[in-house]
Length: 91
Image (cartoon, rainbow, N blue to C red; front, side, top):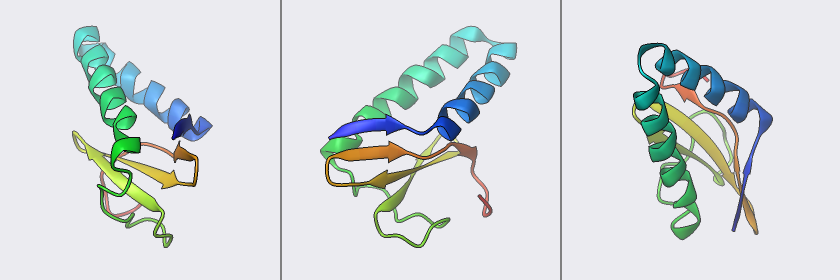
């Protein structure tokens, strides 16, 4: 399966990385590396994470990583990373 990053995810991720980097670029890069590893493992078990609480579709799941929610959509040949946001009940 191919992994596609939506523009919304990329924009929000860069904002989060910049915020973490204000304190420590080492921590920001570690966060990026660990998140990338989690995302790259999604094709192995795409339904591993819960159905999204923000969307009605069964094929949209929520990867929870260090207090952030990363919703992603599972399609036949690809996984689309939709966004990233600090975990809350509202998305």
